[in-house]
Image (tube, rainbow, N blue to C red):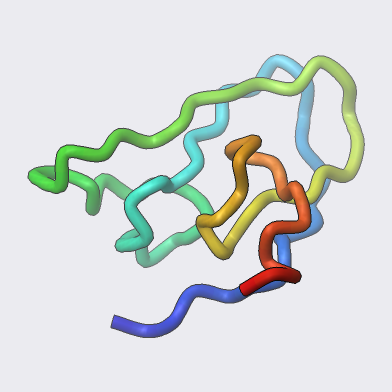
Length: 76
């Protein structure tokens, strides 16, 4: 398995749309869930944003505020 990127994904998110953040680290479409968590005991994090704009989405998996980056990648 390849190493996860450490830097967050900065992306425009649409309000009201449901997003699914991968928490297992096995998704081929990371940071978004592709169903690879099946059988791992982990579940993706479903979320919506209320305002259109850029968000920093965690890709390293170390955030304490999933799915959003909290700077934990700087300590890895």
